[in-house]
Length: 97
Image 1 (tube, rainbow, N blue to C red):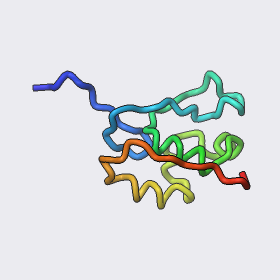
Image 2: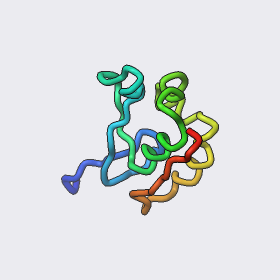
Image 3: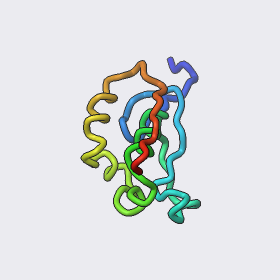
Image 4: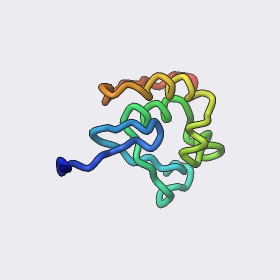
């Protein structure tokens, strides 16, 4: 019998999570205010924006598949995929973005 709670899955790491945030595949600052969005867990969303500038996202990572295949995210994606207990991480932006 179903518990009444919908299953929420992050579209990047494919983990079952408690909540998701909306990520614009084309960043709003790069003209994507009304563009397609995807549901990402907070750790994935923070890591994407820590790893790439909005310009880099707009130029080469406008799909979930492109993000999943991005070389700079491979170590993170391999680490997070089996971490069911991680719901929030703190990423500080570097000075050389």
